[in-house]
Amino acid sequence: MADLSRTARLDVLVEGYARLPHVAGTVSLVRDAGRVVVVDPGMVADRELILRPLRELGVAPEDVTDVVLSHHHLDHTLNVALFPVVPVHDFQSVIEGDLFTRRAADGVEITPSVRLLATPGHTPQDVTTLVGTADDVVALTHLWWTGEGPADDPYAPDRDELRRQRERVLETATLVVPGHGPAFRPGAGTPR
Image (tube, rainbow, N blue to C red; front, side):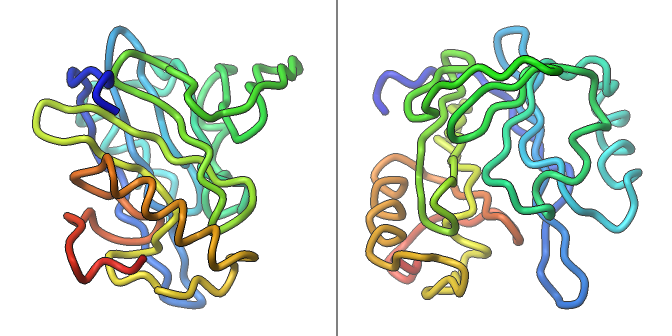
């Protein structure tokens, strides 16, 4: 995405994990061009794990202008209501209050530095959020649970499609923030 601007600020609020029976999704904050975007406000051990880092960054819940959902599993959606009625972006629509506007996510520009990609893989409804920062093009995605994969996502309905979408993201991203683990730099060992 050569046309992706590089002015956004990204902060990971919660680094997700999957240590069954305990699961938390990675929750991220993106700020750019007057927009304050929360990505995947899902399951966490305590809501303060989302709210406290927001406060420490000087952001109140009512400052949030958009929410993006990578997909509709509870571990990525459960805490959407922490934020006021704002546009909630998913793979097929923007929802604001009771207004449902259908639109495909692929290529949607939230700001010049924040772009959505339809990346079916973990589920058929996955969305990756690309964020252009001063240092990286970051992919906030559930195409990987962690930097180690799993290579064969047990939920993926189509392994070949997962592989295609991973390759698509890796053509652009220099840093990946996965659904349930720390950010990683893609390399030869990154599961495809």
